[in-house]
Image (tube, rainbow, N blue to C red; front, side):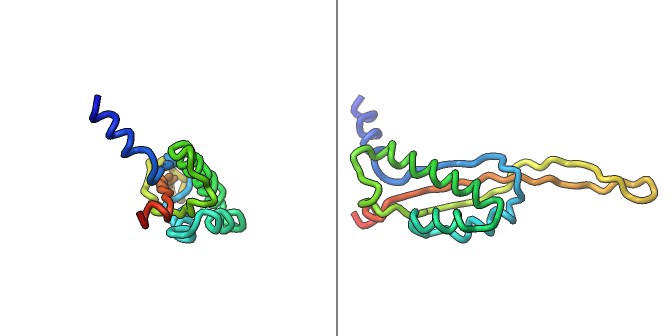
Length: 131
C-alpha cells in the first residue's frame, strides 16, 4: 500500500507524453516538421505548426495539443501560463510499410513501399527542471 502511494506521488507533476501511431506519412517528411519544434516553448511550437505549409504539421499540432491536455490532467492545480511548458523530447520512428506493386514495362512490377511512422512527444515544465 505504501509503495503505491509513493508511486502516485512520483507520477503527479513532471513530464507528460503523447503518441501518434501508424501515421500514414513517411518518417522522413515527418522529421522535417518535428525538427522545427524540438526544444521550443509550447506557445511558439503551436504557432510554428499552425503556420507551416506541410501536411504533417497538422498531425503534429494535434499531438502537441493532446500532450498539453495530458499534462493538465496530470497537474490539476498548476496553471498552464505559469508553468512555461516546452517540448522536452520528440521522436519519429518508422511504422509499418504497406507493400504494393506498380505495373512496369515488359510484364514486370515495381515495388512501392507506402511508409508510416510513429511519433512520441514529451512535454515538460521549465519550472520542474529548475527544482
